[in-house]
Length: 413
Length: 161
Image (cartoon, rainbow over all chains, first blue to last red):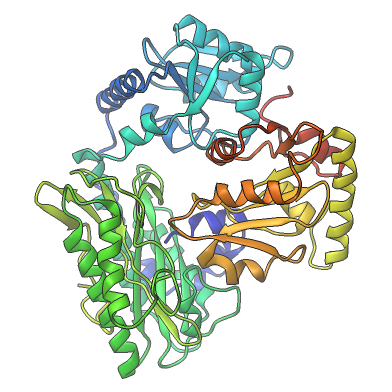
């Protein structure tokens, strides 16, 4: 699971509260040492290889060029970051020739500094608009009649483009962007490893400070503060008690009591690469029921890990975890009490990205793919347990980035 | 256009009625929205965007159709105060089928008039692409003008055009 997008959209005060009450952050968190040493950013050479692969995939799929707005795919190919949602700032990557940038005149200076991997920058003015420029680039590169649109491009940009070039067919760029991004290089896996290590360090420090009467928002503040001390930005969804049964929690206020389940989920990013880890434990002494369900959850997580071999289908990994839970009398399918969602998602520059461990996905696992392994057991009215570690596929099977939880009272391996 | 908790379901119904009047003027049979400014103003629903499609179909005639992930239903129902036609999709199902069916059920393409549907300017391409594949005979057009007429203040547009 991943809460970041919910928090971002809500623009809630949660992440700001820490700054307002810094004195309450325990020393054990404030004194965490930065973990910023030894991080190797993606090189331009690697980005050039990504562009080459994109060109090859475009030719294979008979796509003449792909068009991107700011976001994770643009960053993937170029290293360029630009705030989304504003004036059209686009990148065209053609099947032949150099990429080109379409930037607004109003932001020209800033854009000149931001763009990378190509010096072909076309500035658009308010009188002409961006789409004439974009269509001109496509013509200059001989892109032809089929253009791929990156998945998160806004409808308005697609609409402007098709009005300017009505004879062109616009298709999903997924075969190109997903085709590249779904397989991670050793450099990418190293960055994800680092992000996972940071998140575990953060969680360990914060879990040690849990005390009766804390609110889940207090714990979120501690998480934010721990990430800051470690030198990164990150946050977490924190859920107590019966609300742990809801995969994305509840808006209801929650105070920590003896015997409550505690679920903490999410991560941080290192050079754009995401971690996403969930730990569920109990505050105080676990009941036999809590322990039994926790152990079942661990068994389900293990089953997905064991099934995630190269060549296996994505859906078979979901089925393996789900079977453990269904065999114990839960479900079936997505029915609660049981596992109400897929077993896992791809992860990389986005917390959730292609491809997914879900029924119906017959994509076969390949070395370099990365997934979360997180088969929640949700029992409405009681509690939920989710253990989430991310794994990467190797020639010899799946490997976790992190040590799995050992027991309900030992969340860190 | 401030959003406060005092805004009631009746207010949202009025706003949607105003949109429906505008849709008739613009010759649109429905508008499809993702979470964002327009959804918030017209329905009061604030929802974070993710890869899991969460959308509302606002037809020129009839009740809204909500399309959302199955496991989010309980959380979503707490927030939805306008319309109770909530169509969930499970993880291995297509949200676009639910949206296309919603359009059909609200009469899009049923009459003599050409089927025209307005799309939120901020709606992401993959959702549009999913819908158009299942309902290819519909003319999809920007909903910017009709939303503006209904009182939705636009966020900064991708370009002036």
